[in-house]
Length: 63
Image 1 (cartoon, rainbow, N blue to C red):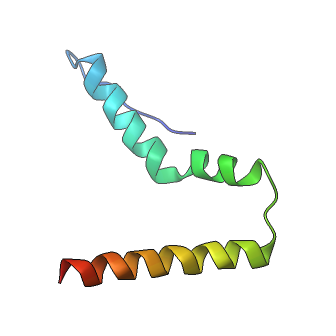
Image 2 (tube, rainbow, N blue to C red):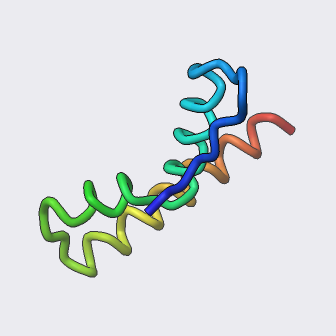
């Protein structure tokens, strides 16, 4: 459970922003989306390799 202490006279926007940051760091939403549909291990590995290749080509273009 995520606990956010709201300080006295603190704007709700700031507290909400801190909550969103903490929530994002926990990775709950990412985990939920990945569990919605089963993905075979071979397909997951293939996607990881594709992302790595894409990142590598971007880095080479920037040089």
